[in-house]
Length: 385
Ligand SMILES: Cc1cc2nc3c(=O)[nH]c(=O)nc-3n(C[C@H](O)[C@H](O)[C@H](O)COP(=O)(O)OP(=O)(O)OC[C@H]3O[C@@H](n4cnc5c(N)ncnc54)[C@H](O)[C@@H]3O)c2cc1C
Ligand code: SF4
Ligand code: SF4
Ligand code: SF4
Image 1 (spheres, rainbow, N blue to C red):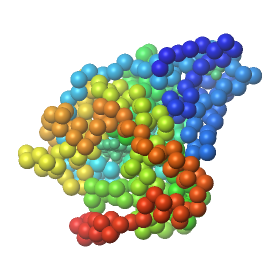
Image 2 (cartoon, rainbow, N blue to C red; image 1 turned 30 degrees about the horizontal axis):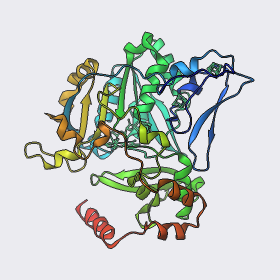
Image 3 (cartoon, protein in one colour; image 1 turned 90 degrees about the horizontal axis):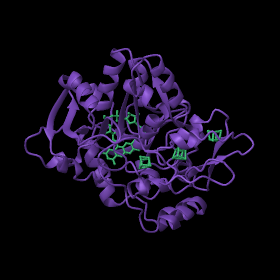
């Protein structure tokens, strides 16, 4: 995206169509001049307070949409999963994140990742293995990075290695935020990302299902008994609820790509070559392979995009069942490695209905009830687990 300077001297940041809500700009502003405005769906874009802004331009410099960092090279592609079954069980896919995190902690570094706690999805820092546990598992809701970019910069300045994990836009942001001087200690591991809805839409879907978001403690969007999607949440009283029967409107709309941030449909980071050292995803395409023994609880695709990623991986390679594969195979059923999700027709009308319509009417209108096929699939997976 082209940078344009405003006549007022105020920085020109992204509009709601381009803003990824990575929060690099607000993290960089030492004057507290940036806040985020949200629309009815919770889609955000930054607003600059003219009374506080001193026109230093730092926020524009760190915006990865305006100034993307340098991309990596041609990736090496692996199909893999951790040899430690407990790590695979506690992760969404093959447990690559968990193994990388342990490696960095063992070397005295720290790890940043997303957790779901107290009804919030947010980034935090782990200095001990037990703090990595809640970071495991995909949370399909926008994570609030809080002051994590600043913390990461501080740790790097103290000479500590930092593994920062998150969506590709957050990792492009941490790289521009930290800058080239401290880049050497920073390792970045991004998830393949088809898009993320804002927390307001998650809350709206919970209310629509008769659940008060204030009662939610944590959520698991994928269950590890099988390599598939099924949401369960834990209330503040400690009771687990399976959302399949509600029905799970949030995940149904997520899978239909209806609720992502507007920027996701033109995501500048969904491309090859990638911007992070590591790219982690699900190796859906490997299911058809004859040579690799797939782990049905989760088999990951791992892209090593930089020389540093290859070096770190060689130090942890013996923790995995792994095989080098062809990039074309990884792209099967995983197009977001190389391009953004297309904006589906009817999205705007659906979102307008979602924010205004009675829940039952909405569910009927958009055919979100469970079908016989859904029920059969659900019980078959439960029997197999
Ligand atoms: C929003 C989202 C969309 C995804 N879309 C795809 C896809 O289209 N195709 C695909 O192959 N894989 C996708 N994934 C990645 C996949 O689900 C696994 O997370 C990934 O393969 C890593 O698995 P793992 O077993 O190594 O680690 P896990 O233990 O599953 O680790 C989870 C990692 O994801 C990070 N994370 C979790 N939730 C969030 C969040 N809300 N925001 C930022 N970071 C988060 C954690 O910090 C951690 O690093 C997506 C993940 C997320 C979070
Ligand atoms: S130009 Fe400087 S002071 Fe103004 S909003 Fe950006 S970072 Fe803050
Ligand atoms: S993309 Fe990130 S840095 Fe750029 S304006 Fe949006 S939140 Fe700020
Ligand atoms: S699709 Fe792109 S913009 Fe959207 S959350 Fe993922 S990385 Fe960020």
